Image 1 (tube, one colour):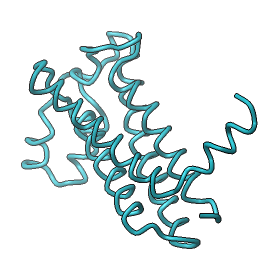
Image 2 (tube, rainbow, N blue to C red):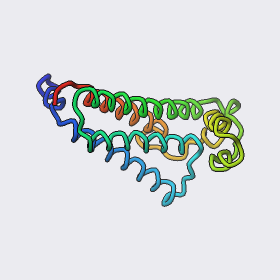
Image 3 (tube, rainbow, N blue to C red):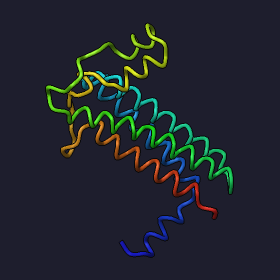
Length: 172
């Protein structure tokens, strides 16, 4: 891609990119619910945590777009978007790691996230969710050879990068 094209892409308005980031997160969540309710794929605890990270990332993008801040506030949004996106990327990376474990090392299936949150203290429920379970290791859907958590990892990294890049700039 020529250097002038990169410059043109970087000249896109910050507000447009922030609304785009929000719309992208909303679209990914819609697709997740499509897979759940129309394709019958039940989300595992790590999938649900990734959805929460998409909601957080999308809401920060939306607030940044509505506020359309300059200077220091836009940099705060940049850091918040990057933090939410990288948190989601960390959850997705853990999920990918569990999916690539040898079958004899896959954790046993555990209770669902709803049950864990009702029965256990929040810290213990989150620890159990991040440990993963046998259902987290199951690859039930792929596109172009990548599973849902692998796509999610790429999307989170892209969202974090775009949010950081466009909101950190001092111009516009």
